[in-house]
Image (cartoon, rainbow, N blue to C red; front, side, top):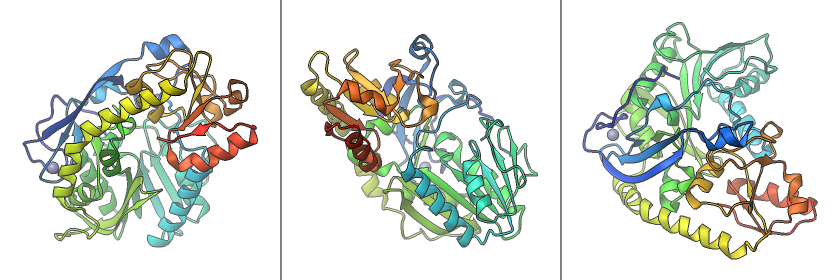
Amino acid sequence: MSAPGMVDIATTCQACGAGDLETFYEVESIPAQTCVLFDTAEEAAAYPTGRIVLGFCAICGFIQNLVFDPQDIDYSQPTEESQAFSPEFQRFATTLATDLVARHRLEGRRVLEVGCGKGDFLQLLAERGIAAGIGIDPGYLPNREVDGTTLEFIKDWYGPNHPELTGDLVLTRHLLEHIPNVSEFTGWLLASAQASPGAGLFTEVPDVRRVLAEGAFWDVYYEHCSYFTLGSLGRMLRGAGLRLDRLEMAFGDQYLLADGAPGEMREPHPAEEPLDDLAEEVAGFATEATQRVDGWRARIGAVVEPGDHVAVWGGGSKAVAFLAAVGVPAGAVTVVDINPHKKGKFLPGTAIEVEPPSVLVDRNPQLVIPMNPIYEGEIRTELAGMGLDPEVTPL
Ligand SMILES: [Zn+2]
């Protein structure tokens, strides 16, 4: 990640440089980081908040938070990725690792991962035969066990300050959505790839198109300052100097995957959607999002009698954004998560404690809300195993 610079109210598109951005959605107050958990309820309640003003570029389709200030976010703090403990997400990551090793012929070669988190994905690549992996991330925790024989980790910001970093594949997963100056940053990634002749570049980001179409307000976070579709990602990568080999959706159409190599590509990739369609979805988002918030308030209000429980399954960013928008009847919501590192911690904003799913046996919730529909099957199985049969309605 880059050392963050100051961003006032942005007036130009950070992906293509065009002016005339169209403001279409605002959130007055949301915790500045939704994936940070706290040891005490007091700290969690006092956590700083940020403001979101989403702007749409009609020229390239890129969406950005026009008032994002990177200084509100401390990426050196340890955070727990919300999905690392899910079997579904693990299956996706291992399949992707196998695919990348084959696609980029990485056996016996080097990989650079920018924004490597705790190094889990590099470890998967190491298990599939890469010769060396370098990870760089300001939030890397060196105390986690990693195969130290082939993997090297740098706890720092990525950028032109590290011209020595390169690899036969340069990859980022779930990083660009946190970067305000996306086009400039992509240029740095390409420079890292160009330092190794024949190297490729891979990036994975969340897709915003379904967020727009579904009014999915729980997927708009403060720390996500940049939002992509297949079209806006493809246009930006091509504009930065990438020849795209692959541009597609994955993980239940929630993520965008792009592969390529430095080179020229003037024609759009066939997967890039028409800008007119996107503009229409952007226009409908604010109305849809408001209706969704009202709908959830009514639904929770309908099932919750005094002493009753609603369970939010997944103590991550979606839960923080969901609870911040919907509001919660005091004491009526239990937040559970299968990640043992989250147990006993408190969510920023609402200051609700994250508990293990086993607490639901006693609480006997009337309604369970999986924060990610892709885990609904897993969650139903766990609930059945506890002898519970609540209504399960994913976001
Ligand atoms: Zn643009």
